[in-house]
Image (cartoon, rainbow, N blue to C red; front, side):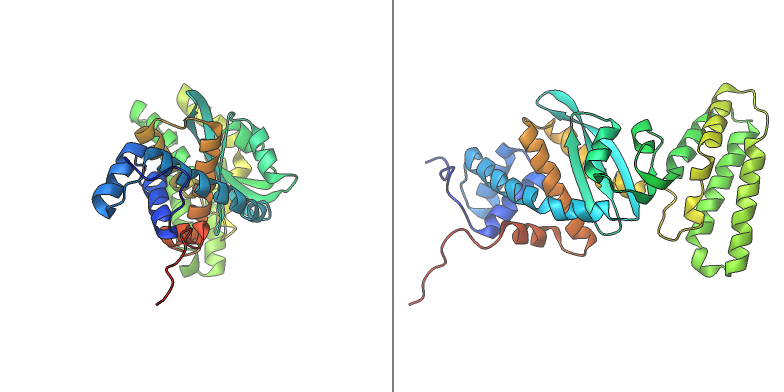
Length: 308
């Protein structure tokens, strides 16, 4: 036969290898089939590979609930989203990150309903995100908007108007605030507090200046509106000034979308998100990706040989 039958189950290591190729290396079914044949001397049809992915996806879906539960209970949550293709339609992949857990969710919309479904009446102390309207509606006592995004936006204005003072000054202030936060442990407490107050005062001064250039004035209005969300990280050691944590978590999914073109079904998208949730969380907790797959898949499906 061309390959092993679709319904046959294999050892955990072989099934983990298949999932690793598909999930982590973004290899197509055809190339996975060839890699198994050329590198491992195993012939498994594309139908058999699909069955392996279905079994792994179902187990991952069962493992998501406790991770989502811990996300809901977290004091600080980073969140971001990116587009994805499901059954030739535009969907969105959301990510919710803490220091110890990552939750991926793929839904057909980009509205705050997704966040409400994930949080289920729970409220974070601080929500770190960009300025997307749905993110700004997340249930949280405070918000920290991503300063990396703001630095890029300010640079765009500087490139447009190189002589403009305000965007350069605001950019320098954000950069110094990020630097100060990174050096928190090396500064005496009183001196650090003085520097934080100085940053706040300079920010207020810049936000009060009269501006005529349209793009610059637009950013000034944004920072006035989100004034209380600019420097939360200066006062909490568990809050980061950027949303890079979420962006890093989404980067493999962007690669997967570009390489594979997207998902053929909603189930495939949910299974991918569940596997990403389990594997990314395991990595944060110091577990190697392949070991996490072995643990997820479980004991070998084939019977062990009996002794003499």
